[in-house]
Length: 182
Picture (spheres, rainbow, N blue to C red):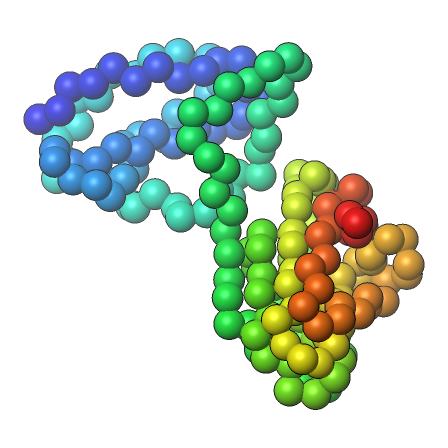
């Protein structure tokens, strides 16, 4: 049985925190405990390996951010989620657009000029999210905002065009608008 003290920060505004750990000698993280307050600062692990819960999510779904006022040293590189080999939706409409879900997306196939992809949905807890799209195909493609949202305050559901071999970078500056970064 593992016995590990795990420090938990109490200076974040959170509603619940999940603690994950591996079984002895393992590499996959499993749920150890959910802490339903924001005041607990330590947890002593006396849970048997066989009593661990569900696997840890592969994507952070908490929608929380840590704001740093000052310097921050990061010992590991920031790894961005990517998707390659995307086929743009035929017809060039928002309805037919391929739904993007990663931070970096590579469009490999645009069968007909203006076939389309759609940016992820943004909400108030995702303001500041970055998204990059690169068109690797010989045809131009359209990039739509998520349904009812907009790009560069250009109107709901209005697309932008991405030429061949071009990369477009976007940042969510409000809960319903993506800004292009040049």
